[in-house]
Image (cartoon, rainbow, N blue to C red; front, top):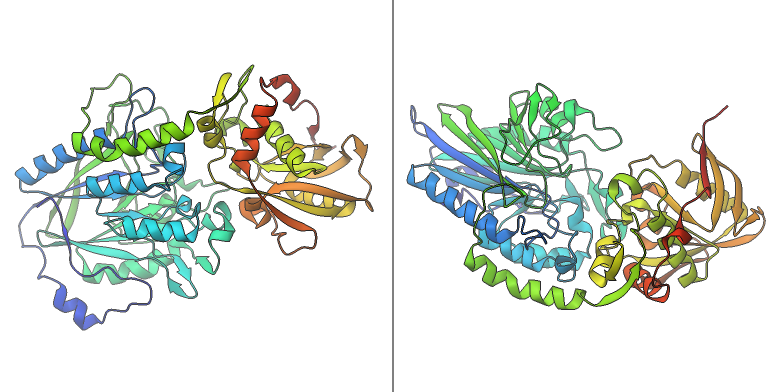
Length: 537
């Protein structure tokens, strides 16, 4: 009973199963007056963390120990289980990024995942890499709302048979993906509203299954307050009737509720956790990086689905009970880890202090790392100025020695540098677009070679290279190709005259700049007052 069997072949784009064929494949359903024990195990936002971190925390080997133990326990008691993931397997750890997340997907196969949602970071790499990952995965990657040329690109759902209880698992992906992902990797794709797609699919699934789940990459936002993000799980559960459970991802937080519509913001590892419930739908999310394994134990009887208990199980987090690592998983993953370490341990240079790329800071204010990256881009491309999207800065650089691994943590996407020739008037227009980007968004800009005043989202007093902006003069701007093709909400400028994709990889440019300027004197890259935000009169 460890591995639930699908009721039918997973639907794929362009394949339509007739109702008669589907009916022939479906069993009679659950037995009346029988109580079924169903355990849902879940993770999300793995982001390349196949190996434990430097403090011995999380990692897929320890996760497998816990998953195997729970499955054995559940099966021995006559119950059934599913292991689901909320998406974003890709991007975050250099050892994984260098190897196209192959160790991560192979580890998920060994863990026995039953299905996962497609996350926005599944589009960070090329379409060929995504195709390779789909072929490698022994489980369906689900998304009902991603279309290519009018047809669904992924299987919208999978139906599992848990001892006669038919469980439909639907996948959904945030419609922000078009903005967050690399547009060059999403040509001909359409990310429709996941809420609207769910509203269409759930009635169909309720006719075919006893329970309807969604594994999503949409985010959980307290009381539905999603701000600048696309609507998430709370909003969907309120809008769509008939969902029993949502296994979420994308917002990276543990979903533990202090009270109705109030999130417990300081959940401690090992402490009790009460999942959210909206419109009769349970919503769970297990933080990020495999720090926790979520476990939800339910009972199903005569059409009633009841949560018995819920826990977020910490995976070797500090001050929690130690979990031994599974030898089989270690044997699978160790060669990948060793290969990555050899490639990444090469020293690059050093810095006299931290270069700040922390998400909490870099998306809200100028930082020394943002300035340094902009200067590296401008100098490499011989440009007058550079604009850096904060969403492309994923980590800080430490004080002291800096390795290539550190560089790839900062810039893991493999973007290339691009240049664009603009008149001064066009520069002003572009800077106004950049200045209007919201704090907290990936489009929030960092500048090099530019002095300006921003008032209520409008720029003024612009200087380029220390000289006042001349509207008729031609300037050259450096950006990355992600921004150039319209990423993070910037305009697509690739079809304009004077646009060049240099082919220089951003991380390699940063590595060379660090090496040439080592030891880096961080005071040289202090943001200072080059960009001033003022309140309107």
